Image 1 (cartoon, rainbow, N blue to C red):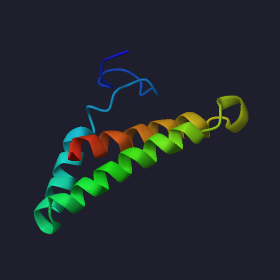
Image 2 (tube, rainbow, N blue to C red):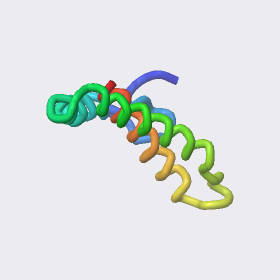
Image 3 (cartoon, rainbow, N blue to C red):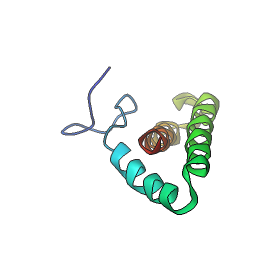
Length: 85
């Protein structure tokens, strides 16, 4: 499914295009301060960590409402990292 979260409820299947500009601003600033190599390492680590933790998420039946909330938070972390690349 493609689309953005604008104008509809935030769901786990929405893409992260709304958070990407913030990642570009934040990590672009860090890149200007400490260098592109360090910033690239941060983005790769955030993307890899987010993906790994999504794989470890429990199901809704096991964890209840916290499972989709964590999924959305981790997808936002991935979007932040993707905007900073």
